[in-house]
Image (cartoon, rainbow, N blue to C red):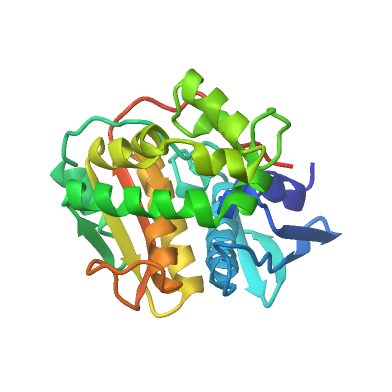
Length: 288
């Protein structure tokens, strides 16, 4: 397998909104390839900013995965050239955790982050800690109530109830088996969803997970590309430390759309999530 093929097999595990995987790779030589991203406008990516975030995360993955393979990645525009620079170090580097990284939507322990873990994560520029879990739980529950109605068509398209290997596996949504079956029934028709009592799925998907974690956090930056780069390295650091994590972007996006108001985020907030200690999730989204 060529160096580029090895690299692509790693960086394809970069996270993307609703597991859309909007990238394409064009191999030019064993050590050179081009990449591009489709601007997948949808309910959450209404202004293209999620595409810029994904571009930043993919670039961070290329840099870290190259180092993991003992190469230096020279990125010029959308062209990447790999140069061998040192034998493989017997030390864990962030690129080693790209494929292992996963989103955990379940409940974590409520133990606060240790000082060592928090100090390590603070090595990422402009991390802002949001320790009021109840405030974040109310905010996420409100966002969940709105998005269940407003983003019905989008969710119907991306939530994979049949385990087909595309989109977001329904098994990762932190719903108990009965609620999951009810949600599958309701998502077939908007009139069904309108009649569905939404308290239980909101509790299970957003309110309780927001309470059962160590803390929430935000990442600030001057632009979304830089924010995505920082967010990817934050998640890889969390994985390296054995921490569970989940992006929780809905409140931020709905605030940008003018649908919600809050006093937590500011114009430089580009990423929001939660983090904590817990067991690894049983399911994860697949990659092409």
